[in-house]
Length: 155
Image 1: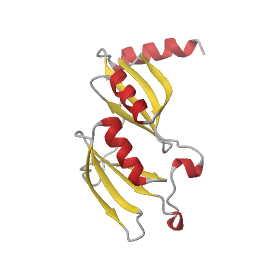
Image 2 (image 1 turned 180 degrees about the vertical axis):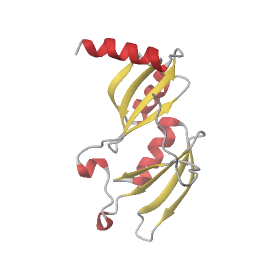
Image 3 (image 1 turned 90 degrees about the horizontal axis):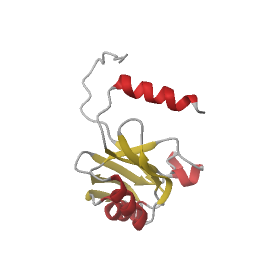
Image 4 (image 1 turned 90 degrees about the vertical axis):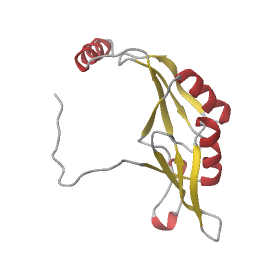
């Protein structure tokens, strides 16, 4: 069953906003790993990046350096992340290899999944996790639930 809340105002876009311990290095990593384009960055006189945007083609990723004086900290500083970013790509294996070549660490190798994707997970050098997947078959929600239930019986 799909549940939907009726919003009081229209939402135009959703952006992921990452906080990292070295935004300049992170921008370089994401450009090398994923072949994205930097849109712009705002740099304060001390050199910290207060805001930057990367064009992923399908959307924009925003990021900044840490600003501990405002409670803005990245995953390495806080000891982990509870968020995974999902990139749906043409070739998961190739994209994972590109991310690893740029400095990411494999968390979960690419494999065919019950939900119709071949996917794997990498952790970037700044502590963020990326689930990278490509479609291998169309699966209805009902079939996905059946496969999920079957898979979870073995746990």
